[in-house]
Image (cartoon, rainbow, N blue to C red; front, side, top):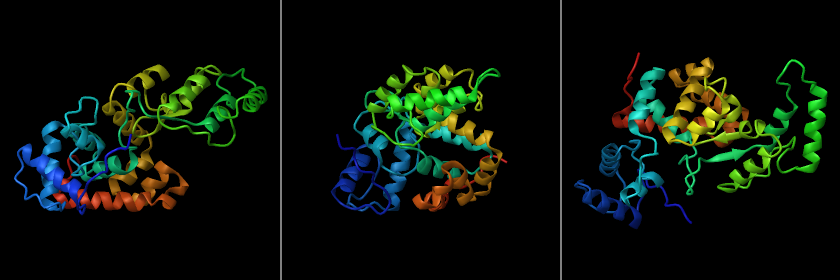
Length: 283
């Protein structure tokens, strides 16, 4: 099923015209001309606030679904972002920016399960890593290598083998048969792709506590993201200072520039700051 295209400032055409008419039906007073300008963006933000969605001014998958009558209870709310900005001591516009750029969009699949991505190379590394004082690293590595020969799509020194969507949960289920602890730790979870092996570092009571919360709501997924920022002082400092290249490098890795993460963050921040979302909400 094709996902609806996001409509944003600068978009034009029939889809924008339909959006404007739908916004007018919700109480806006737009001139429906098919041109997504300032007044349409303001109307989208107002609608998003009205229904509790993140007020980013973009009519994306979640906003369009809400206008069509979808249930929004599991979706990330604007109030959650406002609270996070205060908690982190950063501008709300900066939180909008990282949410827009660093999230994978919706945190759940069409079947209601949380989005995950199973990483076979992480599974290999975790299987090879001693966890207890009496663990023999050489024995663990031999075991991991043996599993890699038997199940290369599930255990492998190299990344890859991705199936995408709901099929990633089947990969996880198969990997659990090999090791029930390492498999969930080898997945990234939710809209912000937080790796399972971070659970203890982020203050969760257990791996099960972490995965249960990732399956609960996008608010819980965003909570993990906020905890990740708090747990990494240099990352937190870069966000506060709006040093986007530094933030992108620490969150996305050294290849961040190839995907223009820093440029996208800067542009997203400027867009939200210019619309009046740039005030500092906490010292």
